[in-house]
Length: 134
Image 1 (cartoon, rainbow, N blue to C red):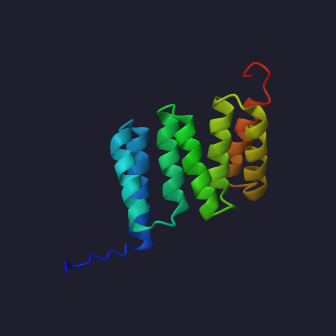
Image 2: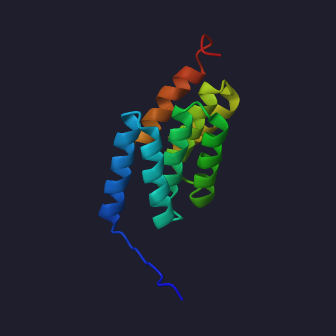
Image 3: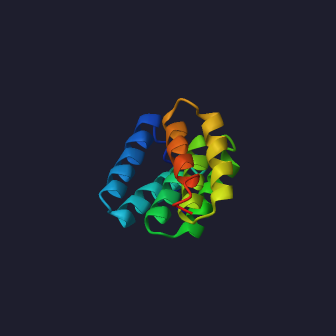
C-alpha cells in the first residue's frame, strides 16, 4: 500500500499562501494564482476563502458563470461570508443583473457594515444604482 501523505499547514502558512495568490492575481499572473488557490483548497477543502479567491480569478478573466459557481460554493460552506457575497454582488453588477447585485451587496453590507467587504459592497451598490451603468 502506498504511503499516505498528510499535510496540516498552520494558519499562518495558509495566510501566507493566500497572500501569495492575491499578489500573483494582482500581477495578472492568473494561472499561477489559480494554482496557489487550488492548492490551498486541496489542503483545506472547507476553506471558503480559497473558493472565493478562485472565483475572483474567473471574474478577472471575464468568466462570470464560473465566478458565480465558486462564490455560491463558498456560500454553501459559509452562508455568512461577506467576502463571497460582496464578490458575487460585484459579478452581478458587471453582468448587469442589478437586482441580484443589490440583494447580494446589501446582505454583505449587513454582515460586514464597517469592514472591508462592507466597504466594497457599499461602493458597488453606488454603481449598481447608477442609471448610466445599467
